[in-house]
Image 1 (cartoon, rainbow, N blue to C red):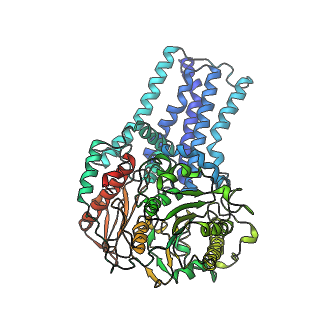
Image 2: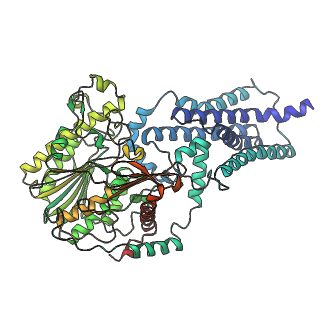
Image 3: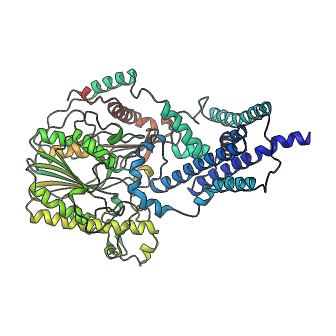
Length: 637
């Protein structure tokens, strides 16, 4: 009997050890990212179950095949753990199966990846070394000399036992979930918060579940979705012509329009000092000369910069799990460049990236740009920013000036900077903030480097504005300067910026400045987002906006609103309005959320927010259906 038991234990020993190591790796993954162990029991159960499923099939192979299989699975597991850990460190979100299509963009952040490498990653590759070490000892006949293979019938028996053990682990957890959620499992259905899901089941289980859902996705827009969209369009109030008495109406009529989309510029740094030094002195000055929108928020999904660009140009929500510029590049859009060209403007896109970055070479013509100017049109005096080939903001903006002067007027142009991109590393001679003071020393290295990059960018912006004035373009242009997305550095915390009442919005607050000669300077505190710049600029130009936009003219909005939603699930996280605000609970159940009366922020019955929540949920859903189904023409624009 002892010999018979050893026949089963011997070939299973290494796979079971690897399954246990897999649990430790996943547990360390969560701990190092600061996740709590509220669900430790179910976490251990499903991860050990998955570890058995991954490693134990090795017993069906011969000796050589067995170790080759274990080595391959170990490499796959390690790659998943390392990539997800680095991705979360960078973006505070998890890499999804749908994002693997964008692997070609990874080269742009190699500098960031290098800065995130640490000794912790060694644990995530320990399984590779374990398998390789055992295999070497076996082949050198130093270990398992008398190893025997199981008979076919024995393999089946062991397989059934492993399958039963693994299944029981998942079954117990799912039953627990059903018990907590009133008979509906939230483990693999309608996950509301990705972080909470990873906390429960681990990153590997999450990625597998996400991959299965992605591969099983067939019809992106159903008949019911189309019916919903038709009903939603009918329910929308028709846009009436803006009266000449509307605030700001037509005050920039006929002028050029210049958008400056600034990489990773957070509102937290505007009008802030670090040890007595202004972080953005030039932008601060500009905010006193034009309209400064201080309650403005980014709307981005996995595409970050590309999503900010998409929402700004189309006044639609970005998708939570796909990058529109890549997955829906050939849709019909009634974007700002197209609208401008229909009103006699020329339209240009300028950036220092390669034309294929974020698929811009494919999507730009579809947005209505007449010309796209990119990397090969600029001379790099020195690499500054996200990589060795990055174009510094000073080079980019100053070299863009003669291009703007050459454009047929009136023109619409979008300039996208990149020096303040991660890993926020500048040459030492360009680091002009003194970081030796007590406040700066309180910052971590990444936050210090971020402020240095922003300070350098601000200098470039100041030079650009002065150059526009000297060239005679400033007085004949309306200029919008805005941040594309958050910096992912947590800088708002040490700078004591943002509103802690709305944690999901705190780090996504970016500035918007609109400069126009003769404009009466003002700070606009109305809630707004990237969706709202489109109609606001149209109002200032005296142009009627199309029907197919979701944003509002911030200067005249009757019910201004900002909606923030969760990545992956797309569910609403926060709604910020002038009179009411809604903060969702982790479980995603409306009744468990919080409703606040604004601007005093006092709690009121959550039912008071029902109409607001339903209205915004329907708008977000309609936006997604429009994009996924290429149904923008259903508006009848």
